[in-house]
Image 1: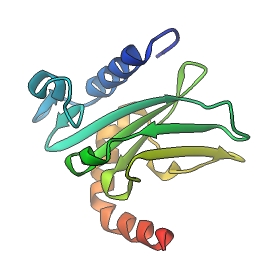
Image 2 (image 1 turned 120 degrees about the horizontal axis):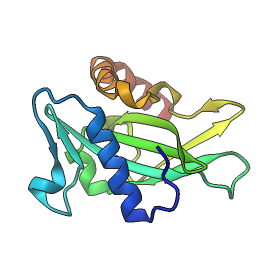
Image 3 (image 1 turned 180 degrees about the vertical axis):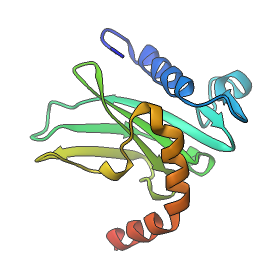
Image 4 (image 1 turned 60 degrees about the vertical axis):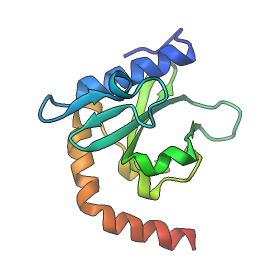
Length: 152
């Protein structure tokens, strides 16, 4: 999928549509804007999972490739997972599924250094997002522990 030439609104709308279409039609599957309006705290409700979708282009101002995602701190308690789409040259580079429990309050920064990606363990192809969500839910205790240990 090519995101070239899209303004910020179209970029987000296209990203939400991509993730929505990648989820199976089993159980609940609703775009939050359809029921909660424009200021919904999340973008997709899928089987009791509230997903917030964000998209970012690669930053060219730093030494290493980096993607920045802005989150609303007040919405963090209402979201289960952040689905972050990283773009490079207007194409999808990576997709990350991060549980809100281990996500920073207002800004997520993903960096790539020497081939290693921060949050790389949460990277997933678009067609495997449902499986990744289930895997994360099973390992959430481990992830919380790792996050606390690294935060000091």
